[in-house]
Image (cartoon, rainbow, N blue to C red):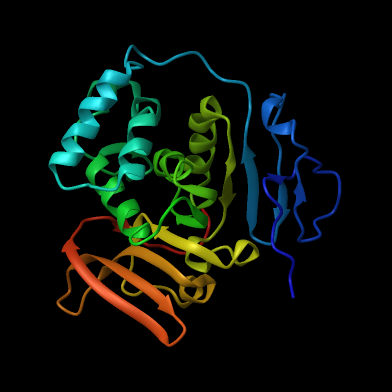
Length: 273
């Protein structure tokens, strides 16, 4: 049986050959800035811990009052999970958007982040994470995010899960997310450059899997890597031909599937680019 990754991940010795096992970080590692982060190839994926020296403060939107107004609106829109609302209030969304769009950071709108991708609306992020946590008390365990994008959702997930593995197929976005997340020094977030359709079996089983891209079906690899009792939340094409939010619960007897509201996400693609 393959040994699951340690927590948190540390792959800073790139001179050693890949063994498929990840060494745990010493307790003080998360507090020590890394002079130059590096990674180690694991098959077709590259896992990197997200800890480094903080960059300067943002562009005047650091006030908690700005995020508090966003959270208030989320509550008015129906988000009820206090853990999700607290997490949304803690993460500074303006650090994840382009400078020219920073004044729109706390509006309930999706924004372009480059390479044809977008950062999802705050309401959509909160809604999907609330569905992932449905019926769960306290923090989730290990969570897999498909489609890191700019890193915003991974940062929010870090507050509601003990461990977050986030996989991105576009190298440009993978690098951008890593840069965006440096400020937050999140020792429980691990970025992976790889094919999201394959999931990340080295970290399985997952208490939750969440996808920021939609395909015709939910890949079998995701279902296999989901723990019994775990939930999967993803946009998927329905039998009517429309993209909708789908929640899959894995039980001892099989899978329970719910189709919810219509959504619009970028298409799910395979490969690394």
